[in-house]
Image (tube, rainbow, N blue to C red; front, side, top):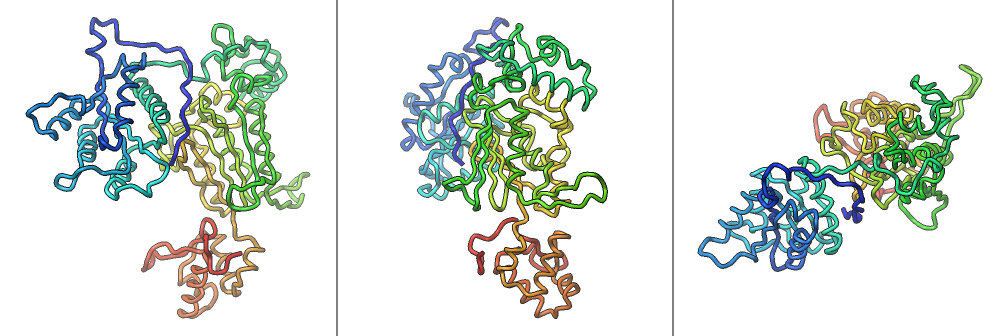
Length: 511
């Protein structure tokens, strides 16, 4: 995946560790640059010059380049592996070439393996947007690295150094050597209390009091309310204050917008039938984006048997749509030039959120009970107080549960192009689609069963439809060929069939 250039926030920096009598040089950590030297010579030199020339990085890091060493009587592999043993940070630059081999391994792979063995802090940068020209062994090495840690792609030296800077600063912060004021806590440059919407703040106080028994009254003065919420710094509004209650938040944080698009197919294509950009405070952005999606979804209206209002059921649960969108607002990286993107297709909803998961969370852990670690805690707190979110880390679990209840595929959580993406799949097998597939009555009956229960086995198919062994096998094989179902498990009692999460690209009988 390619990544966008990272924007380095201009925030106050506090540097620690220089008052204990140690010289700055004795505190430095060595960065070991690993790559095929000839292919990536320019990139290796650029990284070394960048670190040595940057006013911040050069205070904490030295750089080791093998080509800078004078001639010695030592074996080359002894030298470079010894340097890996001593380094603090391993930077792997992976290109197309694998490099000269000894016993089947190149120096680059040996260095990566040694850094892994010694538990070094590893950063991997892969050159190029695709892998078509890569040596098979280099491609295998990239896949090995990807299975252990997050890697980045870069297209040129400026892209490489920008991403390297962000990664090294993150490392310094993690080690406690560098502290930055979080974005949401930093003063919004040029903003004053006059930029706060008193009307929106009053709405918040009234809603928070109703929903969470918040202590402050609705008529609390603006400055006191913001101070109580930790949204003032030296009497000035922070970024969080502006994003939550600003009259014009995008005047101060230009990327704080929500882009919503509706496509009539399953791919991004122009012209876009419906496209809106919402530039308001985060509460209104969430409401506007949710309304945008719901207005485009199919819905069924029930009867008034249980109350004065007829219930409305959307093809995607409203709570799941809202959770995906508010999650993006609460957790996004506001220093990124990208905004939140909400894209509705015929078969799915995608919500793109600039940023990445915290290091302590994985995609798998989102499907289990996990702690709530908001990227912007000062924004998340008012969203909690107004009942837009919960604090228990239950949002993703609630989305999964509600999709299951609605007989929909589970949401997909993934990292794409430096953004966190939530995909919510529709039930693409609508009545009109089924009519065009030429199914017999047994197959239609089986599809209805799978939609309700989530699965069907060969035996269940026979019991349900009264088909013989041969007929059941033929019917199921036909559903497989049409791209409607897929088989889980090869043979035995555990083998069964489920509906494909999305249509096959080349079904036998496309619709």
